[in-house]
Length: 151
Image (cartoon, rainbow, N blue to C red):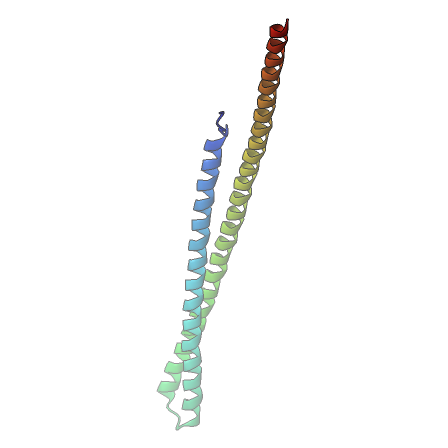
């Protein structure tokens, strides 16, 4: 019995490995974006706390030193927030690139898998045709032999 061997199996194997690498890169980029968003959320929570503290300080007896410290902290946190948002935007660009690479790697792999399927179908058709030919030859040989014995 004939055994099917895909002529470009090594290329398909490489495409599968490239897809795995692209998937890993995508998941790492996604993880970095998630971590950066968590840091941003922490900054925003601290900022909200200082803004609330500033409101309380304004309601109490005026302590200029504490109020200045609070405003400095708010200014610093707003700057950190802006920087973190820039970092998140850059990480999102990396994530989008990783997503595009993953999609292309998946398309490449699926294309080669489809080529393999098509080659396998051709192999089955060829094998079927070969079996029919052998059966026809066997029938013809048996028929001719039976005819010779009758004579």
